[in-house]
Length: 362
Image 1: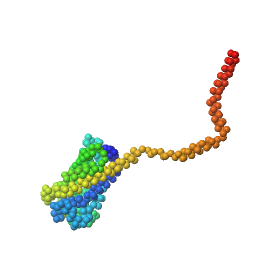
Image 2: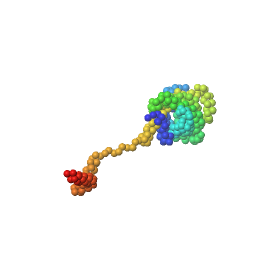
Image 3: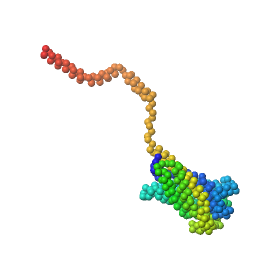
Image 4: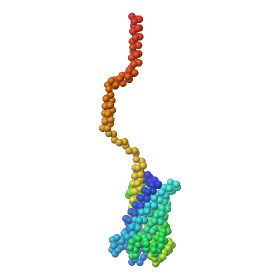
């Protein structure tokens, strides 16, 4: 199956895109979730023993040693609840917009992918921003919450609904360039690695990893600001992107904007590789299933039962043989007489004429 045929799944098939996107999103966030917990610890400006100056391995080891083996997985249920619908709508809108832009404008596929990904992130972030707030509150050191429900109810009761969307604009400002770089790099890598335009999971994995790593490195300063807004307590009030940038610079200097960048890149590279590989696999399977159901030739006729045919012939023959002999001869003689009678008459007259001529001569 050619890649062009694979890439042009009918945009009306929204259910397939949503199912593939939901599975890809859950896989992306859950597989590398412990590293995401480490990233949050490194980026959060909280009084937790100067965690930001430690390495990834040290933070992960101390987290497991002092808080238990399951501590790096705390808050994963929030991601499962939010990532499914967020990525389902995200990938469905991305596929639809990419087809519309590439078909109705002179832009090439790389630019169309970047624009479609940038616009689709508005829907994605509307669902994932509250999820990130709860997730990062549970991930941070000395978290006062007992679980997901306790965290949600506590934030709602003490800080109101606005606390869930405090970092929404920062999230959009971060994800807009992230998705532009992400999708354009992914499409460029696909064109470079896959000039024959065929489905190959290895190419999707490499392209997704490179795209995710590059995009996450570029947008790390905005991710630090987002983490600050999500993890601040009721005693600290930082509102808006400008205040977040100022606070990060005040607390950490220029280097504070790149706290946790290595952990973020190491988290995003395998995550995006898994996400794209999973999504493209399900696209391929669903398209193959659609082609089989739509373009399948008509089924072959049922096999001929020779025993049944012989039985029918035997029955017909036996019926004909059961007819009376006289009736058969009468029927056959009727057809023979009607066919041969004109010829017999002509021969008799010819013989009579020849006898008359002979009598005159002799």
